[in-house]
Image 1 (cartoon, rainbow, N blue to C red):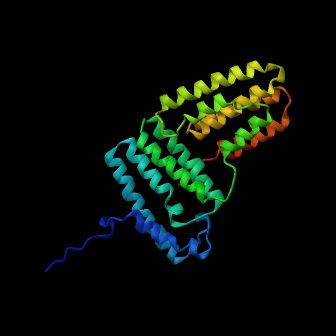
Image 2: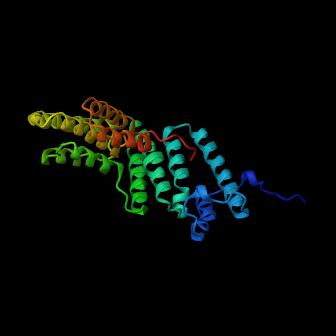
Length: 255
């Protein structure tokens, strides 16, 4: 009598199974998945389970062939270790402000509002798990303020209208509205010299970064560096170069 045996390749692995397989390691004091001992039998087993699940998800994405499916997969894959309890601040920062920030921009570009909302919610959730570290958006605004840029009540009201889950056209319209008013404010106080204009550029970079426009944020920082260099404000140049290299030009790393 023959038996109906399901091969390992046909067994569907759930994400929760994978998360559970890794959950034991943070409890042992391992805060960053990069520090997992790859020769440990339990790590080998967990990684094997992750690989099976990953292959199944990639096959499903290929079958569906739509951007939303790919973003669903990358959101799920990028946050497995987070949901398993790994808590290293640098790792959480990379997940939230590099991987998921890129996915947020892709969701906005594709007009996937609900997906963008989910990604933004996950970024916010991860940020609450991190040790108190100033966000990149806050650091950029701090530099903008040091340069003499002042966010008036009118500007703040415009910024408050922005939400990362908005369609790209709506976000772009509000950002342009902010920039136009900001330029008028700077021109009205031109006696303060060129530094507030550079500050406005840095503030625009902060707003764009906070709303998923990573490439545009990087371009504004690059322009601000050039203008600061032209007026020989090398303190600002060094601060912005550090952000450009460490935060906005991170090398790609496999998730």
